[in-house]
Image (cartoon, rainbow, N blue to C red; front, side, top):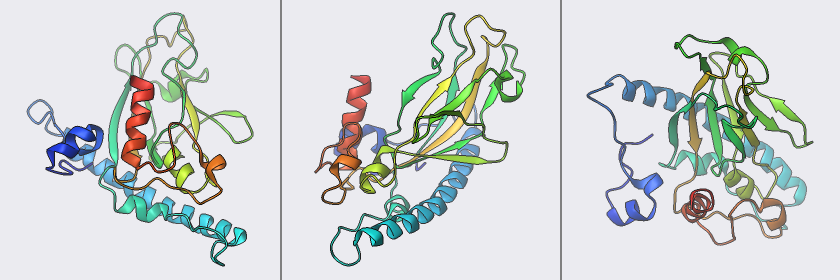
Length: 248
């Protein structure tokens, strides 16, 4: 979201996903940068409002557990952690036409995001000629989540609306009161008429600073434990461990 987060070359080398500057195709596509940034700012602003509501819920749960009475540890504010972070990442995502015989979650396998909140726009689906296909043509194509009760639900985001998912950092910082959203993206059935369909969307991954301690309240490790997280990690260390796990 920010073109330059730091001039420190050591930090850029240590945390390349967050500290390196943006590179824009200014000559080939000059309109991309302003449109990209404006859409990203809208999603971040909405996400910060949502984070405030999450903090309200978290504070109520902590009062029930005795946090304000001194018998518990107060969790960090999700809003404050995100508002002061320069590390939010926006991405245009292109899902290629599914190869023949691909698995049902071929566009993106089941996983949880490692950040705090992920803001999503409504997806666009295009056929081989570039024409829009409303709703991906049906058949269960698109984003699916698994609820806390184990039910798999297809998520349809209406036009001009946003959706948000919780990530692993939010689960850790909340002591497990919030749960990262398990999700996948389902492509067209192999050999179906939609096999040449592509999916286009825009996502903003809202996350803490790389040096933000990723800690949870004492006694909550079991509920908060997720992915590559270990107590004592900063968010940057957790993110790098996550990247190493997935990408080697």
